[in-house]
Amino acid sequence: DIQMTQSPSSLSASVGDRVTITCRASQSISSYLNWYQQKPGKAPKFLIYAASSLQSGVPSRFSGSGSGTDFTLTISSLQPEDFATYYCQHSYTTRTFGQGTKVEIK
Amino acid sequence: EVQLVQSGAEVKKPGESLKISCKGSGYRFSNYWIGWVRQMPGKGLEYMGIIYPDDSDTIYSPSFQGQVTISVDKSISTAYLQWSSLKASDTAMYYCARLNGVGASDAFDVWGQGTLVAVSS
Image (tube, rainbow over all chains, first blue to last red):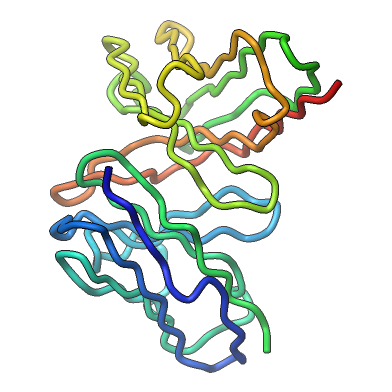
């Protein structure tokens, strides 16, 4: 089974900061990598598919990159509504999620 | 509007059975896989499995194979997740989500609101 490892597990940042979250797969998954955002008490929200394609309606400050085993989610200028937990998920074989990265207010 | 609406919260005792539901609307329910995702208290998302409503083809995550049953009734656009004998460790929020083809792959693009299952003696 392919394992997904995110880093860091949590981070503190200020509004306006550039934030980068990393997701590593235990074996190559090509570009079969999605990103989700979850706010407390809410269902996850789909952000990015195929490693770098933005879902419709997602602000352009979000971007994704990577292929193979190493991927990143970048928020170019953190906004108050972006404080949340972010999950990567591969769709190469099953649909395993990473353990999540919590983005907190500094 | 594309929606998945899940059944309400449940409080059960260990050993009891349970079936929770997820009703789709606003799209052709039969033609999209539906998945189930567990989130234990304070923890991350865990993929449980998916089902294709048109023919009931079901794929379980190895971690959940034999622990739960995923089913569907396409005539009423509803997917189900069921347990025959609940354990305290089944206490969690359970989400259903639509699996949609995006690019050359797929992703869970629409999510239900979640069903909280609490199991306690």
